[in-house]
Image 1 (cartoon, rainbow, N blue to C red):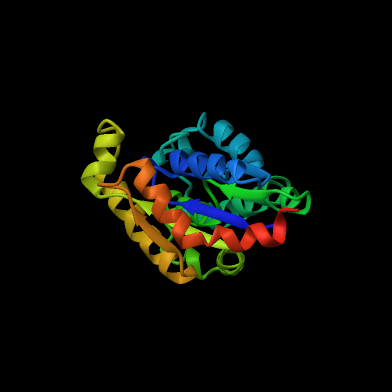
Image 2: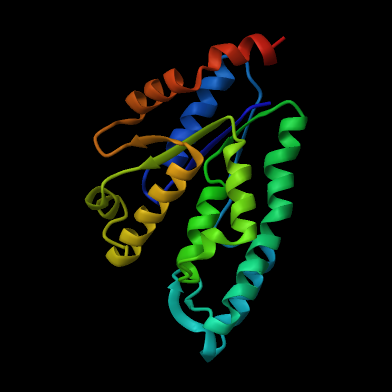
Length: 215
């Protein structure tokens, strides 16, 4: 079954668009599962909570847990993050497709790559073996959609609660990853949900799926 993945910065409209697309596909007779992949997962998440209590790890690189990984531990942490997403990938994305569901991912592997690169402040992470593997896997998604908006609009949607420098680096990384995997780019700055969904449905050619996947 097809995998449709959305990725992009917080506030861009990924979740809203994913839910709207899922409703539309269900109305057209498809079985649909909405899945997501956060920046820090399972083992990594538990470790981050613990490390936030230790002075040596306190910092602002990871805004959710208030930690910064020391330089001599960054590579280990990146591997922990990678290992932590593997069960998520299987349970939420691979298994539902075998069970006959179209999977609509409101966050996916490109978000993970951007997250790890940002929170470890590692400019060369995208050249690592696991990052190359993730990029290759991302390319296999049937539809890849990079959802974004202008910097000013993203700040407004998040009520100003965003570090501008962090956002600039994030947008640059997303642009690079989107180009690497050949994703569609949808800018929601001046588009409402209805117009964006209509545009998306024209891109994904869902009619060809109906002949193949719906009895």
